[in-house]
Image 1: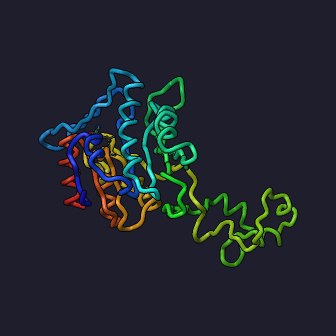
Image 2: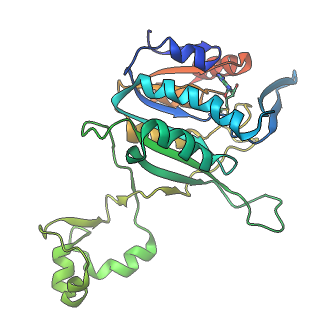
Length: 293
Ligand SMILES: C[S@@+](CC[C@H](N)C(=O)[O-])C[C@H]1O[C@@H](n2cnc3c(N)ncnc32)[C@H](O)[C@@H]1O
């Protein structure tokens, strides 16, 4: 199969035609088992852009449907590859246990990333507002060549305040500096590194990012990025995932492409890409988006 392709059809049938171990990174954002139909009426001509997320056979039907697709994704992923599956509270527990742990193996689980999108809106009065999605991150195998370009985040003001006395003149907090300034605190550290020159925090480079992300806003009507596709995900989210788990020239696949966020970002970041969707509207919107990008 050649690269940089938009493919129209049921992803199960298309995935079955793809060769074993050929894809570096898969991101999927399937229907979430929300039992809703998503619809946006877009543009002056009132075009309806929609997809269905209703499951007459309940959760068993949904899990069986998604599982056979993820089996194909696992087959076509390289042994060095990674998969990110985006879901939410409706089915996250089922997806992790009955699909991902079964197909990839528990040992290949890496993170359940919490994407906490914002705190406005929401109607709940007798429980906490549900304002996060979960993105499961699995590796195909424990291969040292798997790409992980560790994202870094700036140190918070409170971290700087708390640890400032341990900064050396390069703005780094090293174990050596900690030992010099506070031998007592150093002695209490549970795991003292063998090599004291190891850098712990670097004010310039920031610190390794954790698996809860609060800095990326969900797409709202009126945002310049909004292309009028229901449940469109932000480019910043895909940028983080694609940059951390692939390098330039790698092949990125999104089998539930929707409005084409993944393929547009992959294209911008010089990755090869394949996008699949069964909706003609998704196909059209993505084509237009790529032309403008
Ligand atoms: C949640 S949306 C994806 C949104 C996308 N991440 C974005 O940023 O625009 C899910 C998409 O999956 C597509 N879809 C659902 N079942 C499918 C199937 N069996 N094969 C291919 N596409 C499917 C729907 O048409 C819909 O566009």
